[in-house]
Length: 140
Image (tube, rainbow, N blue to C red; front, side):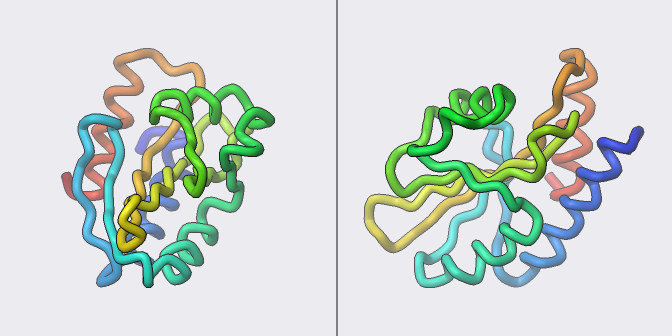
């Protein structure tokens, strides 16, 4: 990766993959431009503990209005938060940060998470290059 922002995200990405090895299987979600994993609801505590190690800020439907613009933009891109859903982030005041959408399914048996990077003030070509690097990190 090319700069300190990318290096920080690379470290988080590698940490995710290592911590979730044998726990989650990842696939690319082109609809939202994120890495996607699904798991059984009985694994929620284990998965959330790992996520919170890397993404310590939690947003939900009651506090998302107080989030920085960058987080609210992600929330809007993902369709907004419904009851029971969360958006976890690393420090959203940084120029680049990671986010995770936590979406329990209506069946009560499955949860999906979508993980991605967010960059402030980058050109479309820079963003495309950085998304490619993010995808490479996950092996997509």
